[in-house]
Image: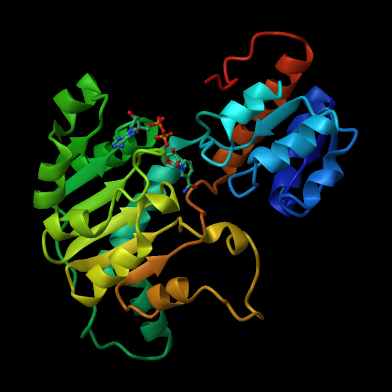
Length: 330
Ligand code: NAD
């Protein structure tokens, strides 16, 4: 099938081209993200391939449908950037990669916890400058600390298992609890209890209309003073202004974000020579106890291979008129 791959980077091309030797789709790599302006580039493509920060709202979907696009292949798991109702209305099929490497994301969440706690990022620079002082590097044992996992799907479960292995007391909240996880690794509690007693809180639920700004002023006020908050899920689960207030009052003692609610114009790009215009983001960077990574939790060779394989196989299944288990229905 002829596919326009939007927002493609060198690594997307590398892995998709390698796996495509088996599928033989006609792949066209387009550098800009999909939006109202770039949607015109999809003309004459029956399929497009997109990622987390491409925009697929009504106006964009209407342009795509008008131009003859029939298939939207997401090369990611989350689909909060797609208006599924409109896609259905316009007869556009949407497929995704429900799981590519939950280990990649869970392990990145752990890396953020360890870095925030033991300040290895600061130690690295200090030692290279001949500064061997320990002031400011004090951490705490993870053993016996209470960790709250919000969302125990594929990624949250693995994060909880790893932390259980560290000797943490794992608590979990999920509207659909997983019995095996509850029996072996953690105790399910209600959200309020999790927020109140956890030393570390890690978010692993999808972004939905219901949980937009799940972590707001009220939720932060319930948390233990000095709590560590980790978000590798979706930016808008957190009200960033509320978190800044929490950091200023020291209610939040450590914050690590791999995702940010207004990341779409910044993340995945090299803006090192530009002036970042997002003052809220810039304020976050001024805190010594904040670490931000640019949506890289998924970024392992294993994950990119799996993404390429599932994306191209999804497209082949739809092209051949087969049932695709990764098609999203509403
Ligand atoms: P999953 O579908 O396997 O699990 C999600 C879990 O969250 C489910 O068990 C669901 O019941 C639960 N849930 C839904 N709403 C909830 C709520 N309001 N509160 C608590 N739990 C809730 O998904 P997954 O593969 O584990 O991925 C989780 C999220 O991680 C994705 O939705 C995506 O946003 C994010 N993600 C981020 C990256 C990255 O690179 N940073 C990569 C992949 C996925």
